[in-house]
Amino acid sequence: MRVCFDSLGGGANPNEDWVGGSPDLVVVLDGLSTAGLSTGCRHGVPWYVAHLGGHLMAALADPSVTLPDGLATALERVAALHPECDLSDPGTPSATVAVLRQRHAVLDYLVLADSPVVFEEAEGGHTVITDLRVDDVLPELRAEVESHETHTPGHREALRRLVLAQRQVRNTPDGYWVAGTNPEAARHCLTGSAELRDVRSAAVMSDGVSRLVTEYEMATWDEIFATLRTAGPRGLIETVRKTEATDPTGRRWPRYKSGDDATVAYCQW
Image (cartoon, rainbow, N blue to C red; front, side, top):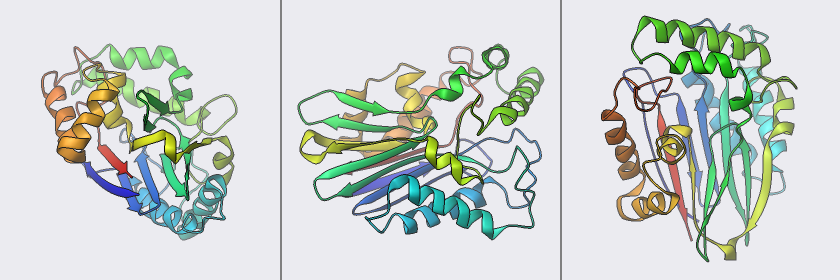
């Protein structure tokens, strides 16, 4: 598996995405926004995704370890790194997870929350694996955030209310699941496999990239993979940024940030 990847922060704050790759493994993490609220952890989201990513790559280097088991192990190991923090805080640093691993002629995938794995099929078409359970949670508060332009006091306050409410249902049966401190989250992933012979290429990305198709509707998956082939991951991220620059305050495409952190790994055989 030939892997190239890139990641670019969405603004002045540190990038809260993380990406790692090897000849048979790709991991993309997208740290959850804190909206300026306390987390009970002195380390912060960039620290969390960096350590989770490293431990997840290490755990899954053994092909006999299943993807959920590897994620559960990584969650336990990262939690053990900072026991002095309040890991029971509902705002503890958390992340979405997307993993693709090759085992001989099989491609295994794992998705937790809305960072997708996308297969470009050998016979044409695409398969998108993503977990959108968060979209079914607190729709009224989501709509309130989207009613405000970004960079306004109303938007910031509505976003804080949404994040506070999301924290109460995060990693619960009535809400949605992300990687945090509880290894139980690894049992709620979407997992599966694809035959390598059926796949032309694949992309593993954060939703800061996939929204070019899913939310902005300014590209098709065919166009996404065409850009990856000709301009690589950085070219695709730049396309996202140019699109967002035409709507800096979120009037056309209501969203949480003018530009989200954007990460993509492109896999070819």
